[in-house]
Image (cartoon, rainbow, N blue to C red):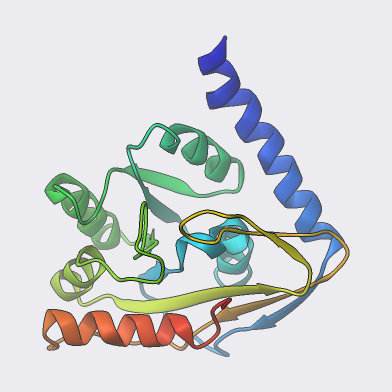
Length: 204
């Protein structure tokens, strides 16, 4: 019963909550005016992840995206929730023993599907960038899109990522950067560039 609640009931209710919040907020999109018809790596901070499915689908309504989701005990609930929001999943970590995950992510990109990653997930430190996103981008030459979400009204959780839950009846500004590449950069240079792009419109 407990497993059923965590894997089915809670994700469904959370999906309804997220949709309610989205529908009752004014939405303002700051998106690239034109994208190449190719695959991308979609990156956003762990603390801002809740509304990013809507941000992505507004820019690419007919595209498929798979999110890398930790095999941590809460991962199954997150996986089911994002499925309700039209996001597929790849289970595992791109940074900790994640060879299998990296292979799956690269395979998805080669099949023509986008990949979504929280570079500071699943456990931080907050607003840090792990090596996985760099490895995937450089092995596939896929460009990166940095996504941010700024609600005017929100609850901030006392968690490592300062998780943001927007309140209803406010305004949410959705940001997506112009595509950028880390091709030819050393790992630390690439990580710094990704962090810089993600910090431009991040919640402080």
